[in-house]
Figure 1 (cartoon, helix red, strand yellow):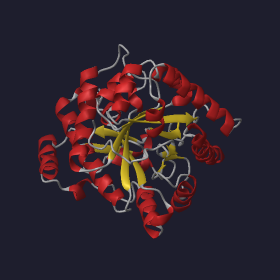
Figure 2: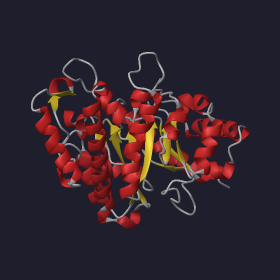
Figure 3: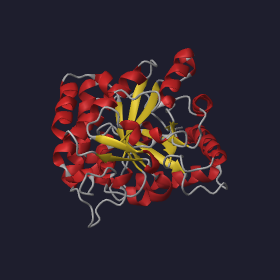
Figure 4: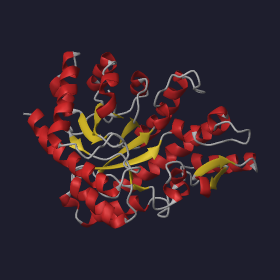
Length: 355
């Protein structure tokens, strides 16, 4: 059983939270709206349109070796200069547990700073959790080019350093979120693993599991945070669960049937205290015609199929979260506000499932 599996005596019971990205640029107003809609598990927003610093790769790059920002492309590349000395300096800081060196500055993540400060003003208004996120190590490495044009996944030495760097940066984030007085939850966002298993994948299954597990174990050994893996497309879900997260987060609106192809793995995951985040409120598939009742029925049908496959109802209810299907950064502002309202109302309606 996961060390962090005893999250609460009552369980999560379809509490709601968000994934990360939003289309807004006003930091304070965005955080206030999140706190209003999702007070039980507020998440800090990634304000993708505010600055290139909030790109999912760039946002988590400070303190990592050999990385250069290409602002016009909102991208990172590996610089070939001073490789050995930069790696030595990096490991000096990492091995010394120098969390401050790996901090995410306010310029890169103002939503994190603002959300913590707002919760600290009135902690009694909010639930016991605060949710953050980080780019996952596979997606991070896959999105960065090394000098020969391949992805960083092809450079084992640098890949090892990046996984360790993301690990200690995630721990820094956990320590920051702890200042709110709430228990941290942190999702590793792994969109690169959508469709994993194609002939073109440069990384093998056991390597994916090992890299994810290294980051998860690093956090688990040093904190009480709950760690999730979020993938917004279809993937090898047995691989995700074998990496050992506390939470598996998926797009339940479009990929429910694919996720339920792994009933034995899901049953073992839940029996070990694992939590499922059902991304049932659509984002990329959002039309504006959605109602709480329609989404509730869609979720209920999926849950009933899960029970038919052998998942235990009370266990599922205890260990379930609700989220949007993915981040909302590519949506317009009006639609994003509507999705958050739907999510909040759906969480309340799911009390019908728990009685």
